[in-house]
Image 1: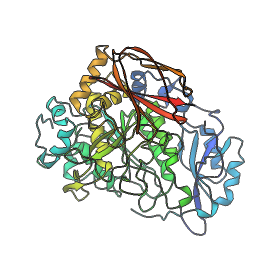
Image 2 (image 1 turned 180 degrees about the vertical axis):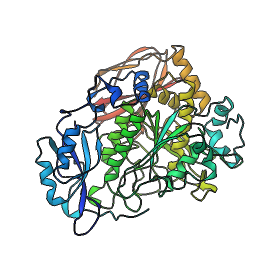
Image 3 (image 1 turned 135 degrees about the vertical axis):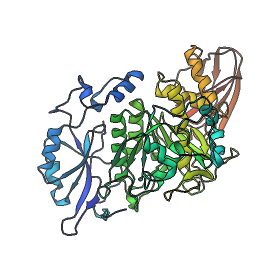
Image 4 (image 1 turned 120 degrees about the vertical axis):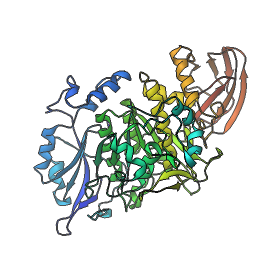
Length: 532
C-alpha cells in the first residue's frame, strides 16, 4: 500500500477562468461498502480476464475489486466530478475546484492524496479544452528488414499471425486509424474490440494523436508490397492515455487507468510507446534515482499489470543521445520487456535509451528495429520513422505469435523464452540487453520447458555476504565461467568454476549490489548478490 500521502495532482481539468477546476488523484482507506465480492469475480472481470488468470495461476485479490461505488457517490456530494476510478491503487481521478477539495479530504472514506513528487500548489497547469486475409508468404516490401530481424517471416510461414491474441495499445491517440488503407482489414474483420479515452477534452481515439496510429501499423498493418505488421491478425484494444500538446504527470494516472481497463478486457499483451522523465512543471520531474521500478506511478502500474498475467512490451525511450541517456518510466519496471532500438544491421540506434535501471537491473531487455522503421502514416501513406516507439510494438507482435503457438504458457514463461532467444543471451550488456530475439529460438526455449529440460535452480549463499567471508555456489551444470558485474554493468572480477559445488572468498569489494553472470556453452544465468 502506498505510504506517502500528501498533496497531489494540481492539474486543470477544464473549463472557464471563473470556475477553474483541477485534477486530483484521491485515495480511499479501504474497499468496504462494496457491491462486489472477490468470491464472485465474474461480476467485475471478463471471462477472458478470468481465463488468463487461471492460465497464469493467479488468485483474485482485493486489488482486483472495483472501487466502492458508495465512496464514489460520497465524493460526488462534495461537488467533485469523477473522471475515472482506479481500483489497483484504490482511488479515483477527480476534477474539483481547489477551494472545495477540503470537503473531499474530510470524507471518512478518504485516505488522502497520492504524492510521488515535490508538490507546489502554485504550479498548476491549465488544460485548454478543444479538439485535438490469410497469406502465408506476404510481400513485405521494405518492412522485410524489421520482420526478418525477429524471424517473423518464419512465424508467418507457419501461419502464426497473432490470431486470437488481444493486444492493448496505450498511446496518444489513433488519428484516422479507422480509415487508412493499411489497417482496413483490422477494422473490416472487427478486430478492434474496444477503445478508451482518458483526456477530458477527447471523445474519440480516432480524432487526434497520430503517434498511436504509427505504432498500431507496425503490428496490425497489412498492405502487401509496402507494410506487413508482425501480428497482423491479432485483435486490438486502443487507449488514448497521453495528452497531446503538453507533458503532465496526470498522464501517469491515465496510463494506470488504461492498464486496468486492459486487464478487465482480458488483454494478453500491453504495448506502450510512452516514456516519462520530465514534465511541463519541473517540480514534477523524475530523476535517474527514480528509475528503480518502484518509485513512479506509471512503473508501478506496469508492474501491477504483469502481476495480473499480462505481458508488457515497453519502449526503452529515445534519450540515448541526450544528457539523460537512460531509460524512462515505465521502462524501468520489473518483469516487463523493455525494448531498445537497433538499425537494419543490428547496431544500436544512437537515440536508444540505455541501462541499467537505477537498482542495477539489465535494461533494455531486448531490442528490435527502431531506425528507419517502416510504419503507416495518418494520411494513409507508408513511410519510415525512428524511435523505440516502433521497436516495442514489433516485439509485441513476436510475443503474440508465441502466445498463439503456446496458449497454455504463462506470460512470464513467454517473456523468459524471448530473453533466451536473444542474439547476445550469453553476453548481455546495458546497451542491447539480451539482444535481438527470434521466433524460432524462443519457440525452442519454450519446448525445453515442455520437455522439463529447463535449468534447475542456481544457488548462492549466504546472500548478503560480508567481504572476505566464504561464499558457497551451487550450479546446475558441471562448469561455468563467472563474471562479477557492479551495479552499472561493468565486469569487476572473473573466475571459473570447474565443479557443481564450490566455495569462493570475495576480495575487498565496495559494499553494494553486484551481479554474477554464469556462462556455459548453452546458457547464461544472472544472479544478484549484496555485499554488506
